[in-house]
View: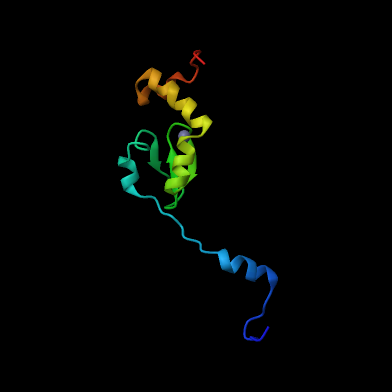
Length: 100
Ligand SMILES: [Zn+2]
C-alpha cells in the first residue's frame, strides 16, 4: 500500500474492478425484432424496463435478458397457447384454455 489518497477497503476494491454499470434502455428497434415483436412492449415503469404482453410482467432491458425471457418455460408455454388461438387480441379472454 503506497497510495494513501484513497482509503483502501477490501469491499470497494472488489466491486470497483467489476462495477461497470451500463444501464440498457429500451430500444424501439426491438419492437421490430422478429423474436420480440409479438410480445414486447415498452414498460411504463421506466426507460430501462421492457414489458411482456403475454406473461404480463416487466423485464429488464437488454438483448440477452429479452432472449432469456423469450426462451423461458413460462413464456414459451404461453406463446404456444397463443399460436393455437391464432390471435393475440383474443388471448386474454381465453385464459381458461383446457388444452394443456
Ligand atoms: Zn413473456
